[in-house]
Length: 472
Image (cartoon, rainbow, N blue to C red):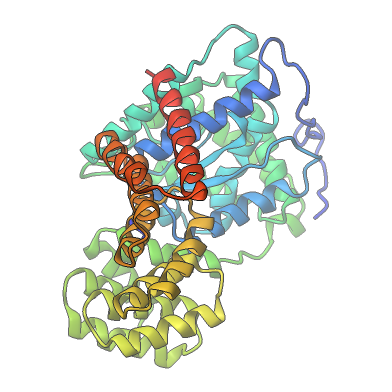
């Protein structure tokens, strides 16, 4: 887009893997589950208003599926564990109040196996299920929306400066965000390590994934603006935790520690992230390892060439990738987007996108570009139908609202068009422009339905303004 917007039965060992206690559904001191959920929802608004979120369903749905796989074997939980992927090269993930999970793209890009990503996420899920946030509330360590916004601002400053999430990556809870926000205790961390390992194994992953993630974090030599903070390398508890984790894993039976790593989908998502967002020189080296017989690596090289405006190279590489994998929905999608955005063969762009959508009809990223292609061809009705489809998946994506609003305006649906431009400005945090478009929408409103839509917009804008005001 969508422009990226402003993360099996187990043999239980005595003293190591404990049965997870279900999350409490009632009062936890003075901090109820409802309080936690409300704080989580408002925190998500703050994060999405301040940090770039990757909305590509190939990436988002993959991370959500890993989280869902971890959560599925657990006792019934009051949390839904929605996942978001933040665009930044930090090796970072954190869980927020209410079970909201955030993963930084750099974490996915630099790990070696899906089990390692799952290990980090299992650790964060454990912080939620054990209600460590509520525990801190009970002990009087009040976390206000202002303090949450301060954490988000720190991360955003790191994004703007090219640093690692406000100067801390994977601290303490394995996440700069949660460490800055909660400063989990050593007992909380031990708890999350223990239950996280249990969750990882119960979900069918190789338990070595959690230790592997720790090792990757320790071994990364982050130069050039994404330096590993001193806290990670000097934390007195880290080596103890690593040693205990290795001992716990070594004591497990071979049928668990020898589980096969299934990294097929993980590799595809990694390739997409490196191709679209990674350092070009580094990404080129990664893709070169695949040679000429790896269709996904060829796609990655093609996307890199397109980023560098090497149009002929990109055309040839996409052709080679499609020759190897003519029915790969992701490669077809990216080839279609390339042909469309680089002013190539529009007929071929349409064919590629239509083929991709036949194979993967739920890919709303492909739907968005197909809608734009139809809009350019004058098929306003067809385009608008697809914009609406995309907005059902990503209702706060400012770029989709912008294109939809313009398309509506082109067929003289002025009130609705202005209103979607107001939504685009609202979700881009441009209050002045949002108010301007809203006034135009009001002036154009004629029907009861249009006036109702304006009221709905005003209610959403007021709720958003309230959250931002409380966070100051």
